[in-house]
Structures are given as C-alpha cells and as structure tokens.
Image (cartoon, rainbow, N blue to C red; front, side):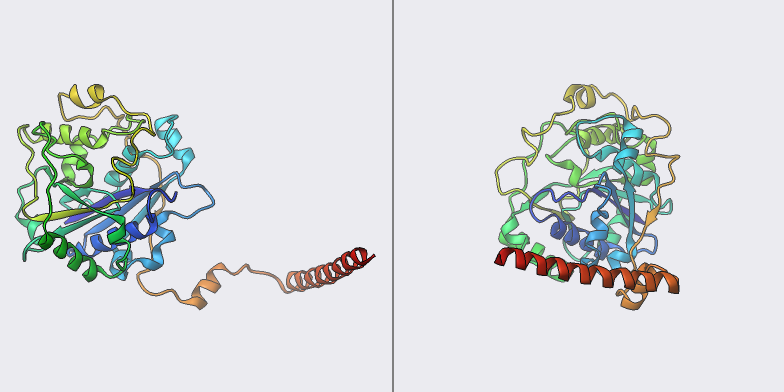
Length: 345
C-alpha cells in the first residue's frame, strides 16, 4: 500500500543522528500493515570505508523495521556521474529519485519524508485505514518540533513509548505552525510529509536533480504536485495525523541557515508553471544497477557471522602465519629489552 521514502548519509550531522534515525525508522515500521509496505533508505555519499547509516544502526532497529527496510547506496563517484559537480556532499533530489524509481509498484502511495520524523495517527483510525479512505491526490501535513532534551530520553526501539509520548504532547497542548500565504505550499518544512500516489511522483518526473545547491526542493515538489492535481489549496492531514520532528539543533532557527548556498527561489519555485521536472529521461539513475542492501530480520547468529567473514586459509598458509606471528613476538620482546637497557645506561 505505501512506500516510506527517506534519504540520508552516515556523517553524524546534528544532535544524535543515529538515535533519531533509528527512532524514526522504527516508527515507520510500526505503521506498515500491508505485505507490500516498505521503507526505502537511500544513502548518498557516505565515505567509502563506512557502511550506510541504516546498516550502522541495524542492531537498534526492530525486527519489523529490518524486515521492511530496503537500502540503496550512492557513492560519491556515482553521485557526480549522475548530476555533475556540486558544492554539497549530498544530493537530496537524486537520492529521492533513486528511491522513487525503485519503489514497489504494487504500492499505491509514496510518502517522501525524513528520518527524524514520527508520523502519529490521531484517534482510533490506523494509518492503513486512513490511506484506504483517502482520495488519490497530493497531501501535506504541518509538523511540530520535539526538542532534543525530550526525545533523547526515550528508548529508540520502544515504539509504544514513542506513541505514548506523542499522545502526551497532544494532550499537553501544541501550537500548530502558521500557514504560509501560498495556498499550494501551506506550511514551512513541508518536506517532512509529502504524500502522493506513487504514480504521481513518476508523472512529474521525480525531484529536480538540477537543484544542486541547498533548499527549496520540497517547495518545488509541492508546487509541481499541486499543478498536477489542478492547483488551488493543497489539502493537509493535520486533523488525522501528528507529524513530530525530532529537532537536532540546540540553536534557534534552521540548522542550515547561513552555511550553505541556496537554490534560486524564483527559478525553481516561483516561476514553475507546470508539473513536469526538467530532468533527463534517465532520472533517478534509471540505468544504474544499484545493489539492494537488506538486513536480517532475526537476531544475529555469532557462528554464522564468523563463518561468513572468516578468511579461508590452507594448512600451509596457516602454519606460515603462526610462524611469522611467533617471530614478531620474539623480535618485539628483544626490542623492548634493548630499549630498557638503553634507558638504564
């Protein structure tokens, strides 16, 4: 029924990136009800020696999340081959397009969101029931911020605890964000919840890969998806859902403010007059065979891990290795003895 699409990078950005990512992915996993439901995590330009962030935190993900999670990795070399040079270490647009291209075609819906977000249904209606009742079009949802001092105290794998926390936030009183003057945009930070039929993401040609600087990509998506759905006021799901953002900056304002070059608002948003992207036909690395990375749903078997990663050696090579190790131990002891003698003299 639905693909949850998130993108990221194993770079330690912001407050406690591993924990907020794990909490978010585990929450998405709890919302999956249909056999085809999936979570796609696209990792872009993590340094080559490191694993993707989703693999690095695998031991903190629930079994259901690991079962639903599909990981695609874009190396820095592949990123530059796809979009050319960029001053940023990461391409949000290319990453999302990789996920859109590779999402399950049996899923009617695709939610483009971020891996520091909780999507919490209000009332007794489940997320799956909400999706089944929605007319197929583009939806937004306002978000509220959860400060680090609060969310860092919760157990990243204890989804019921996070659910109770979201309920408590609502009961305590929440100030909803003000609306933007643009009827198609509605709210700030709309990228935390952009829900549309999967087919519509394909119809608009994905996110704009030409936006190689920072900012306004989500506004561009909202503008084009709004055009595709006939214009007017984009509907929101604020009455049915609470979208909670796990804030990752202790300062006031946007974490990227004043640090990164911006895409031009007029060129990429204000002057957009139709739904179709400017991407080439092979957007989303259509013709690149990116390997699918999956995580085992069950607990790791130490013996199986050892067998899978043990280097195979012949008997002769094994004896040679032991002999060299023995010689180095004796040589080290001799060198240490000489150092002590030299120091004593």
